[in-house]
Image (cartoon, one colour):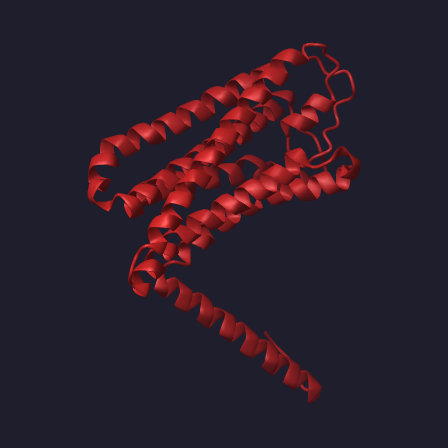
Length: 269
């Protein structure tokens, strides 16, 4: 599990680093410019990292399935070599799909301006600027991507159906709680990833507008990578105690500040 968490952390770090630094630089310099090569690289890495992350999350559901439903076969089915091979397959398939998708997208001529209505170079926004008639290749790649994503989704759902059936057969309440606590972070991350991405790409065109598209893009491109480490870290009791102490201290300071303000004294941070 920790090997796959390492891969997930690297993917989240890469996803944040792909979009945020350039966006912050443009905000500081009050510009919206990005080079054509930079835009292509940003779109490629974004698609590569997020497609690989979905593959890693799918593999992690299999890891949880084996750990709970077939614990005696765990070292046989998920040895170090098998884990490395599955992770390499996830990274390799994500790289190949992103390379084909980005190469096909940026081989089309742009004739509808050069303003991307997004804070990063998202492929659907780039396609809106294209006037090429070679959409069949793009449709084919989108269909392939959708089929792969749907297959991963079915695999994750099937894994958790088997997991919940096995957990409910555990006689002790402590054992059921331990099994659920092991699966809950992964299930939360998958739900967040799928819900934001599905809404971003499958929302009805009738509710689509530039401002809403930008808000939705923040949800699926920044929120999951930023929240994933927190979700998994909260399994650690020491970290939960530290977060609880920090929140208690903040609340106490806010209450003290309000009471001091009510008495007319000056409140200092």
